[in-house]
Image (cartoon, rainbow, N blue to C red):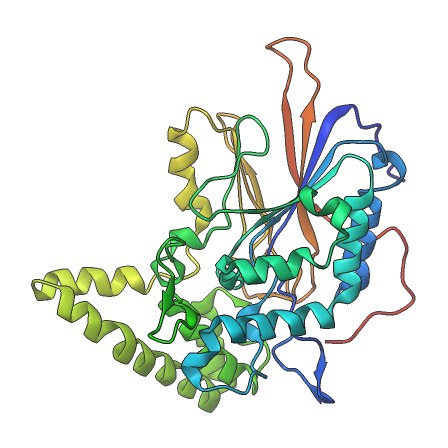
Length: 379
């Protein structure tokens, strides 16, 4: 039997990402096929554990590393297509999410009420509309006024360093399809109405992925994508062919013509074409060079791809992908099947007495819950 070891660190940092709170399992009495999060009780239990018992008086920072809210998965806003990105629609979408997951928001509030607790919120590509201050204010209203100062929403352009030699990014910054500039992503029409100008990847999610997810709710949850397509062609041929055709047509209409206009020649166009097609890259390879070159960084933590990874290299540096709190299916041998892993990173900032002592301990964990529930929701 395993026992919890006594924690002698001076600060604990816990990191979750890609929770994807949606509009709820049912909307207006109809099952919401876009809702990916079904672990409200488990998340509340997680928050309670790190604010009570052995952590009751301890300095604990919870970092939400992007895509906590899924504003791309709320289709029940009765507006024209482009109005989906208006500030008014974004507020409606966020209100639906907050209403559907009241227990989670209350759990965050109770966490902040505990002594020496803080929450840092990093915006991802699925909750990018939080660049609107009105949406940030709406989130803050979920917390008691006395604790709101302990909830911080970070700016996109800054790498977050919660401790010496530790860096956090959501991870969408590595993909052109999901990259956006916080300073120029809000536009205003002649009437003064404000809109979020999304990256083309967000359009792709709402116009392609969400449509096909209505038929197969696993369409966005299978990795790697190439094996998903190969298996789909064998076992679900007609659906997979329609899905592939829709992807090709969408990319040609939205991106390839645009890239042709900005290219000087066919060679340049071809390079841009394949660069923008790179989705869900191998972040371990991408970030390896960053860790090797960054002399001021020993730990790099990302999310976005939903694949939990914890790797320590020969030079002692550590890469962590915190995974997701949604169900995923992996077709690679040795990487699990369809079981959900509620993964989170935990960083212990040690109270070192001299320069030779270990100052940071970082690892990836799976939340198992403090109690074994007699049943769970079948999804």
